[in-house]
Image 1 (cartoon, rainbow, N blue to C red):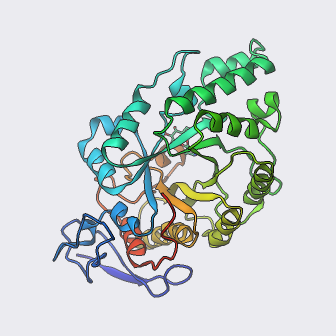
Image 2: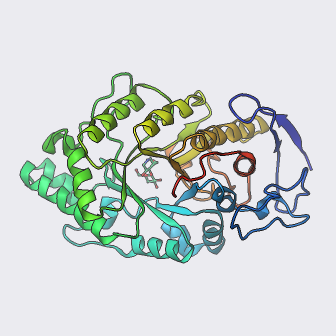
Length: 386
Ligand code: 9MR
């Protein structure tokens, strides 16, 4: 078997060795198996002669008090038994990739379709997983009755406010006690060097305070749920992440119930590695907030080669390491765990291979890298409370 060992340096564990190349579940271990010291309370003990795949990510993450999550595609969960088994085995948290979005939950005004989301919650319960709720307010995947009603003026600003309050309240109450945390507002800011609140129907008709209002409504509906804002391209310290930092500071000063900041982490090898993610997360942590990577994947232009694979290992682990370095970084979630169902090829022409497992659900170098960092990290932040 072709094997190439590459030393990755930099922000990653300096000098750590990554085995890069085709990997199979039966490959002979090239070094002592990971997690030779079983995680405290861990059930998956070291298997003599076994490979690193014998220790699922959720087991390795337990000693850090860190939730390891994935987005779940409900069609795949319904039809693909190996997908279901992997999802249960590897992850301690799940996020609905689509079925908790407004267009899915309320396709017809006043008629809620809870079925698929309830199935996910039940799957999580059976497998001892937490549910990360995604998402209450987003300018995408809104129901057509809502967007067309606002557009043609049949829903005016006062009515929209009532509808939004009702939606937030109904959804959060429905899942009360079953959803650990909510992405209350998703992708509220514009991109670029001078981010402002996006010109969504919420911003237009409810005013800039719609974020504070939504947080208060969600908190009233489930006082125990952790309430997050969530966005992409904010992994580094940059104008957009700073806009969130300023907003979070202000909201918390006003005692608005904002508890967490979600960093999506959709990375692309053609852009710089977000190496100041630790400093970025630290400033939110200092505000007393939880942080989380909520939608991590690492895309690149196909075909796959060894260098891109190595770059992908580094990208995943830059974010994972930033999370481990942050006392209240509670969760590291991938946006799909297998290339079989990833959203990436459908959205970015020519790109793909963005998740830790290949299309046959076999571990890639990226998966091995996550295992290694979880196994070797000496982490003083094990009381994250996930
Ligand atoms: O992965 C989701 C894909 O299946 C949907 O078609 C798409 C619709 O906009 O949303 C994707 O998930 C997005 C997430 O909800 C918010 N952050 C960006 C994600 C990728 O687009």
